[in-house]
Structure formats: C-alpha cells, structure tokens
Amino acid sequence: MNAVVATSVFAVFMVAAVALGLLALRGRGKGGGLAEWSVGGRSLGPVFIWVLMAGEGYTSFSYLGAAGWGYNYGAPVLYVVAYMSCGYAIGYVVGPMLWGYARRHGLVGITDMVAHRFGRPWLGAVVAVLATVFLLPYIQLQITGMGVVLSVISYGAVSLNWAYFVAFAVTTGFVVVSGLRGSAWVSVLKDVLVIATLGFLALYVPLHYFDGYGPFLDRLVTEKSDWLTLPGHGGGGSGLGELWFISTTFLNSLTVVIFPTTVAGYLGARNADALRRNAMYLPAYNVLLFVPMLLGLAALFVVPGLAGAESNLALFKLVVDSLPAWAVGVIGVAAGLSSIVPMAVFMLVIGTMWGRSVLSLVPRLAERQKSAAQVVVVVAGGLALLLTYTAPNTLVRLSLISYEGMAQLLPMVLLALVWRRLTFRGAFSGLIVGVAVVCVLVFSGNDPLGGVNAGLVALAANLAVALAVTFAGPRDPDPRPDAEVLAGDPVGDEDEPLAVTRAARGASDHRV
Image (tube, rainbow, N blue to C red):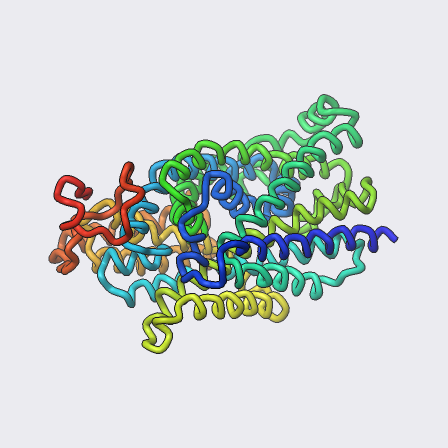
C-alpha cells in the first residue's frame, strides 16, 4: 500500500511537470528559432533566471551525494557551498560580460563565442565535442540519481531500469518542445518543493530522532568529532585536506561561470541587471545545501554501517524509515525534479552546441539548426540512458574529469574575451596540454597532487603554454570589423539590435 501511495504522488507530479514545461510555450506560437528554444529568446526576467540557475545548481547530488559525502567524510563536503558562493560572486562580473558579447553578436553558447572570437567555425565544433564528453556523465548521473530516488520511495516496487527510463522520458518530453523556457517553468515547481521539503526535514529529523538540535550536535561533537574538521573522516589518507579544499573551491568557482549550462542561464536573461540581481540572490539558495549535509551526519547515528554507494541513500533511509508514504512521495518528487531540471539543461546545451557549431557545418543542415539541435537532445539523452543500462562505469570514470576537464576551457572562453592579444595557437595549444595533463593525473590516481586539485595543476600548465605560445608567435589576423570590441557589459545599450559593428557603435564604445 505504501508503494502505491508514494508512487502515485510521484506520478501525478511528474505529469504536472511535463504539462508545466509544455505550457511554457503558450502564447509563443509555433515559430521561434534556435535562440528562442535554446536561450528563451533572451527574455527571461530575474525570477525565472533565479529559479533556472538555482535549479541547474541544485541537482540530485544535493539529496544523494551531499548527504552521502556528509555521511562518509563530513566537513570536506562544505566545498560545494564554498565554490558555488564564490562562483556567484565571480558571475556578478562575468555573467553580464558574456551576456553582452553574445547578445551583440547573436550568439547562443560558448561554442559560438569561441568560434566568433577566433574566427574559426570548426573550432566551435571541436569545443562542442569536447564539452559533450564532459557533460554526458552529468546526464547519466542525473538519470541514475532519479532512478535511485524513484526505486527507494516506491519501496522497491519500481525497478531501477524502469526508473531510469522515466527520468529520460519526462525530461525529453518537455525540453525538446519548449527548450530553456520550459526548464525555467518546471524549475518554479521544483524550487517550491525543494524549499518546502528541506525546510521540513531540517526541523523534523533532529526533533524526531534526537529531541532537538542541542542533543544532536552534542552527540556529534562527542562521538563523531573527526567528521567536523578537515580532512574529515578518513584523515590525511583521504586527500581532502586544506590544500584540496582551497584549490578545489578556487578552480570550481572559476569553472562554474563558463560551464555551458550556466552560460545558457546567462544568455537567457532579459538584461544585464537581471544577472547582477541574480548573482546577489543566488547565495541565499545555498543555505539549503546545509540540510542534506546535516542529515547525512544525522544518519550516522540512525542508520550506521552504510557502505559504498549505499551511503548516498542516507537521507532517504531517514525519510522512508519514519514518514508516511504520501510524504515520502512528495520528498521523492522534489529530489526527482532536482534531477530533471539540470538534466534538461544539460541535454539542451548539448543539442544547442551541436546544432549550432557541428551540424551547421553541413550545408543541408545549416538552415535547420533548431531541428538538428532537438534531434541531438534525444540522441544525447538516449546515449546516456543506454550507457546507464549497459556500461555505467564508462561514464562514471569520465565523470572524474568532467569539472576539471571543463576548467581547461577557461583561457579559450573567458581570457580570450577580455584579452585581445591571446592567439588561436596559444589558446588551442594550452587547451590540448591542459586536457592531457588532467587526464594523466586523474586516471593515474594522482588527484589531488600533493594535496592540490589536479584540475588546477592542469590549468596552470594550460595557461603557461597559452601565454608562451602567444608571446612567442605572431598575432592572429582578424578580418572582422569589430575585432577590438571583445567582451563588455553594454549597460544602457540593452535595446540595441544584435551584431552591432564597430562602425555603427562608434569608437567611443570600444571595449578591449
């Protein structure tokens, strides 16, 4: 009976999520090109941008991985709060800059920006392929996360294989049709449920199991003090000490601002001020991240002995153990939508990159970028689903280098937009070296290296090579009339048409 009730609640909300995503198109007609589909027509206001970017950052990891890390290690999991908060501060500057550059030139993603900046369309295709390799594991992780959630809240009645398919079907159901706007609408439902359920659990679990926060924290300090300091439980052997915490926070805070899914949120904004306000408000959402971390620590006393992947179920072990089936279903919906929203944006971004930068190189597909991108969404999601069934360890291993690998795009995407002198040879050479170094370090078991995040070591090598090649070689020829106008924040110019050239803007508006 419990399984029927919880699963029914889950099913009703999933249908509502798909309907809400499809309703996002109401009043928009059947038209709209790639920009309307991929970045919401650049018309999303502060509220939709806030829920969309909060939804992209608050994934199933927040319910499963954060609780699992808290359960296994303790304090090191706080790096998530640290890097996201620092990333929002950097995004206050970078977000409007990327938005202004993309809007001025009619661009819809980082592959567009790279291709436009260096005047080489094929380079956008290379970045699209590389970014896809780093993003596919995230789709697989969200499919797996939702599958685990649905299987647990159904009390085992729904198999993992069926749960994986539901995750794929629900996400594809609305993102192919309604794009970024649909994801933003579904994010509203998701955020309401996340805030409500985590707020409830933050009060319920300590009171129900420990008679309040005082007894719980006293017991935590007395019996599990190792979990409250770096490097956390496991000591120095875990490699999660102070250097790892600082280097990972620094690297991830830089990387998150150029992550393709984050940039999709930036480019969907109506204006630059919406992004600034969003950067100020988003850190408040991070407060919610403390809840699953805290519940993971609480699970140490309630369900001790969880090992391996089972520790990721620490939060749901508490939920299923003590709450009625309908409440379990609602909490499962919040966790499920925390998989669906970021998965939708990941799939959308991959589709956009390929439709715009890869398939558009084929003459017959150049005029059908949106259709091509929608097909790629289905293919990318289907590939992640297939690998989840047949070779889950393949993407799990790739996920080890996802964030650190994406960090190697920082010079080519960000530095190149604020420093005109960086040459194509320099940026491309640095990228090759950076990706090679991070792969060697991670797959040889040297991450962290001397306590430092391997991605930061690779990024240092990337920058060194990029600068050396740039200064040693000739300048890039650039035939574009707006070569001097790189990234900028066109405050006060937000109503100008796209692709404003140097001649039209005038010399006084050049930004190097």
